[in-house]
Length: 382
Image 1 (cartoon, rainbow, N blue to C red):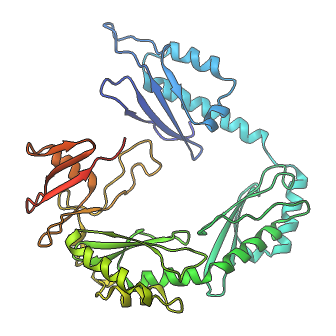
Image 2: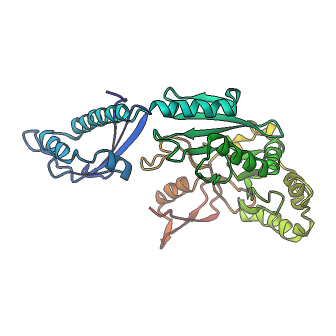
Image 3: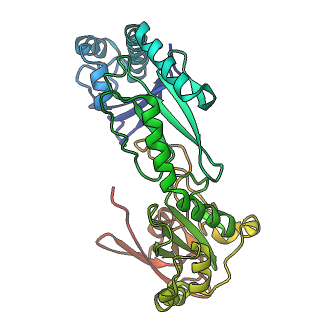
């Protein structure tokens, strides 16, 4: 079998719906099963009425195998057994698909000639069949940019797919006569546009304590900056006009952030596009920003006051980030003498356990777990 043991998670309390996930040849597959029967008295049951759903790509891959899948559903007595068989079927399909999709000799000759033209020293990685390539480009500041290129077996009739860690999608346009060198030239021009943007973002990361993203990429256009006192500022920068006034959003208690927000409003006329973003923020907000070095010392001040962690894991199996670290504290007590931060989900769960909590529509009204100051939190939509 080409993958690890499947993951099965129930989607309802009656155990009649399940989410299944597994990998085959390093490719992830996920399915949902509905109308599962309850076990019979003799321990035997049929899955003949079970409904299975999946994304369009997997649906296309399984096209023509409907009769086989229905037959196996009738034969299998439990869902784990069927999922293992489904994994085996996809393993066979994937292997056959790879064998039938090998490129022609002309494909190899052309790709090698085009790499020769570009220069092999600019090639960072090449797949065994030459359909997966990674090229490196260095900008004026010495930053290395990796351009990942996927080629179809009938390249160049079918245009290549290219991706890079860029703040905007690069539309390279695939015209007749275009080559990989043409594609890379489009990326070189795009990289040139974002030099000032990356300079601005690197200066932000070096000067301030950045709470989010935890490991910034060159495609990230926002930063959440710690302000101290359990407060933070999220800025979203226009990559094509990085020295313009960014979109700003404050997090924290009203008592703490209202004066800072007022300074932003009253001093915004001082914004100078000739300066770096950090210089403008320091002058306009007129506060002392926590330095990156104090991160370890002040971790306790930004951790959730209920679960005592900074980042919550994403426990929703339907999300791509399932099992990875998710949200950080995004609510705070409005009492200026408290200001403790909380995850919205933690605050909702805590309030629901308190008998004095009231609910009006999708808003819970309760008290801060620390100082009993009134707090309201809006429920997330399912």
